[in-house]
Length: 184
Picture 1 (cartoon, one colour):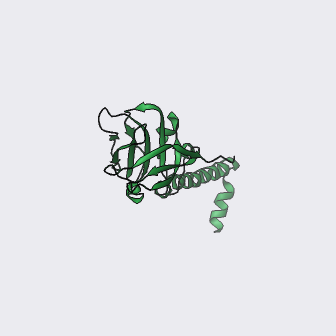
Picture 2: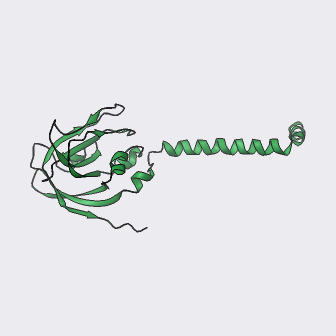
Picture 3: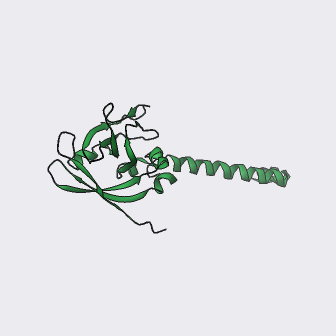
């Protein structure tokens, strides 16, 4: 222990400060990388999406209230669930709202769990449900040349949990969308 003190006392102040900065940087990088991989991670783009509720008539004709994050801008739709922790994805649904009918394909990147994507026409008719595969660069969309206006994206099993299927009479009531006021 005495030899170590002797060596440390011979180091210049600049070297000591540099050592402390390098050590602090290494610790910070370790903490940051844990936060980035966290199962509860919420990226800024996702956090900034409004929260709302929308009604869907399920296959049994029962109105069901779905709590959603609203992606109604290009940036919000582009961000989607990208980088969101697995626990958050498992408890959340996104409602993509397009300003007009589209056939745009949905690119799902940076998501570590399988998702389900429901495509709804302007009148609320459910036309397709796609299931994503983790780790692929596939895009997802409604059947070829079929326009849609709304997309609900949720964790695997989301639509079955709410009694919604393409074969049933499920319908999105877009006019029922309520946005929760932000208390910022």
